[in-house]
Image (cartoon, rainbow, N blue to C red; front, side):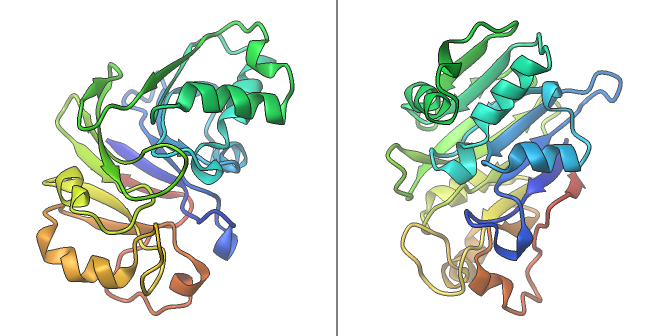
Length: 246
């Protein structure tokens, strides 16, 4: 599985980084298709900067309904409409995603939620620890601790060849992260702050629980200004454009 960290930043672009967006794929270079894990408000810019065709995105998996993780969807959908996209788009997110997406479309571009398009937008919603197949991938959500007006999830993704990754989303430490990342090849994990901050994962808590994680590779992402100023020697950290194969 090819994994590209399109955006590794926090909500406020700290360090000049784009907001959260992770691209999975393509499996077949001759038929490029991608799944996104989160699609922050800056993601369309980041995708284009890194050479991704937004019309190649088949599925978007949303961890939670904050704009730096889901706010790029109205732009992705409108871009597809104006560039004559014909392939349907599937969005999988927390309970309430369908309504929140329609509301966001109307706030950003009034009338856009009901506009006729050449493609459909299908919305499915996570159910706690219930697998969902997108055809190419199996998605398993684990509820975590992050207030966003709807449940927030860590997401585990496995392809048909058995390659698996996990993504923490935004969360305080919770033992759900142990299950979400168990035996994965890669765990993209929030490392937001040096010390505890409500609703976010701090490096103290993460360090205390490292020996409980069985992932083969942990990479920090979603770093705050305070974390970016640290000497992070000993931690592997993501950056915009980081490409990995698992």
